[in-house]
Image 1 (cartoon, one colour):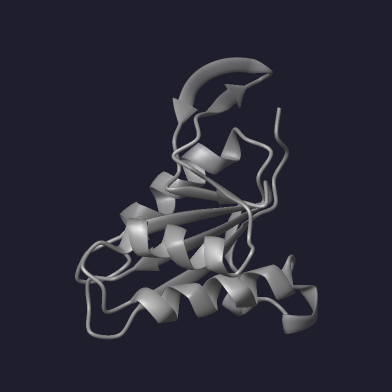
Image 2 (tube, rainbow, N blue to C red):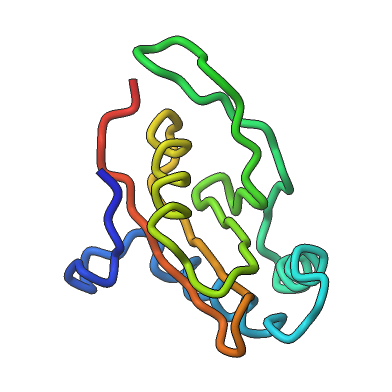
Length: 130
């Protein structure tokens, strides 16, 4: 199950400090046209380690069924996905869920730069990873 962490008690946030730093980076670059490259620069300048579009195996019942390449994997803990759309939709959230469900990652920041105000969904996957 994937949950919008906004619905959870704030004391239960995972990777709270790192997430705060990442969100700061997102707001720093939200007016840029080439968001991906700008985020990479800002993460580097802030000393936050990351991998760009690193392939990760997606598994089902212990067997590899595909590969997922998130925009960023930050400090090998958090997946950062970038979108440019009128809104973050249920379809976008579901897509992330199906990818993350088969990996070891628990936290996804789904970021939308498609409106005048940046949209950020903090999603927690709390299921078993086969």
